[in-house]
Amino acid sequence: TLAEQRSNPHSAASDVHQLSQVAGQLISSALAPNSQAVYRRAAIKFANFSLSTLSKPSFFPVSLNELILFTSSLYLKQFAPATIQTYVFAICYLDNLVTGKNLAKSFLLRKILTGILRSSAPKAPRLPITPPILHSLLHCTSSSSLSSYDKLLYSAMFLTALDR
Image (cartoon, rainbow, N blue to C red):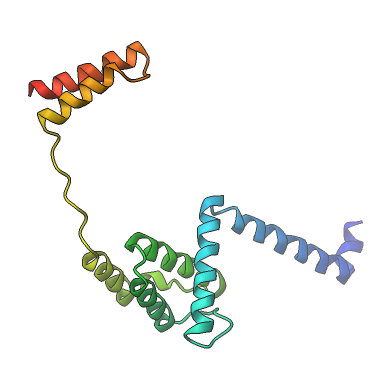
């Protein structure tokens, strides 16, 4: 009965254990499977960095200084700015789950990430599509394996662009 369950400390501990498991499952399902894989990769990278550079086997809780050093190491290894930002935010997310503190809101960390974005090599400018390119595309459309309907649509699009 309910009164027996309340008086039995073992069932209360069992209830708490079960509720803790459900809470863990809910937290896990808060991230999409692809995000979980990326966050796992970020955690592994940070753990390796923590062990090799900081000589610290356990990385939670993460200090702001450690996160800044990790960010700098990713930059020096020439990771893409978007990857660095994703990995840093993944570590912040995981640390927030443990500590309840959100390092991602740090002014200094945000400025470092901005600096990484601004100092990365600019992408090659996109050149305009010229009439000779459009003529080439138009020619390729007729010999492609597209359906007749799609060939007509692409041809109309390229001819419209040529007319401008």
